[in-house]
Length: 460
Image (cartoon, rainbow, N blue to C red; front, side, top):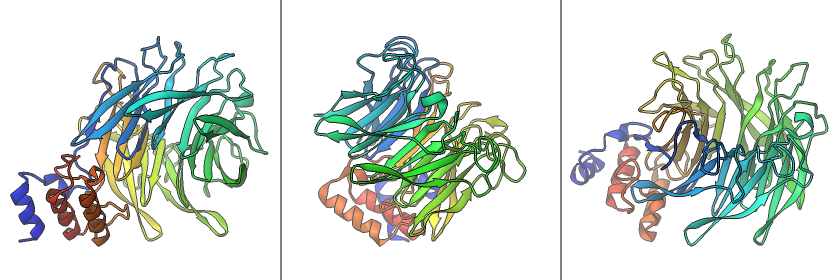
């Protein structure tokens, strides 16, 4: 008998979920969510901290919005705090976008009126002694009515980027803020030289160190209306400059390439949720690009290869970390119901291969599962903003653990993962706690070794 099987038999009554790529997810509901809150419209995760936006929550008046912070504690993710803006007002829709990096959370409030209607804003929260507090409200120095600043946000260490897709008659813009001590100051406003009305540049943004991507979902190019594009900017010193423009190699009218964007190191993923697939209209796709010495090169087009359906919105949301890509498909029809799903791809050499198709275990029609996705350290979070558990369209989110034991994110459980586990065991680091599934018991010990060994010997 395998040593891991012996350990499992001795230490736990059930490790049945180890045969799956992902264990049963943990479902998140806001402690006070109600009908039409749309909890899960946006999600973010970094290590043990997860953030879920509920942009139509009524705590500060109708549709003012809120965001909920969750923290991993032993085998549970507990709701740690509910965040609302200090000057919230009805209709602000705070929580339409969220992101987290370390001790910083940024939340978009894109219909905040400020000095003029719907100029928009973004709020920065920081954590001290376990409490998240509002640090600053970000606004554009040239804010104008209808800018909708805050439709998208992203934070990476010392920089925040905020999209304002309504700027200049929906030509769009994005703003970069940098931290100087406790103060965030506007560093640069980003626009594009070939901008046109209704490009919606800034609808989606993402930043990773000195590189950022800004989606222009309605950009026209090559004679194709609303085909969409994505712009790469890089930072040298204090200046951000446009490095590249990404297009789909098989672009078509109204693909909306750039509706969603993600980046990790030298890999980028761009969603085109209305791209046609093999004659199926609006099935959706996501395109993978790699950074090379010659620039950014399209490597692969990802889509539902087994059962593409019309208007299933594959690529509505995307995320990437290490060798894993997620593509949300919130209108995917399973068992005749548009419940939604998330496709997971892992890299094998230079090819991305589908590993899993995630669904909610309690899925219902029109839940919108996959409307938002994020991943960090092997944990996946998926938003379902139209779930009805706390009332019609109250919303929910799900946390999945990736294949237990793949600590270095290379889609393979091997000796290197054992080394990571051993180090965590010595340092009592609960981030590597994987037993019992799905979220462990708060301790790294021999039970976690049993899970890793079982997956190692199974060739996962």
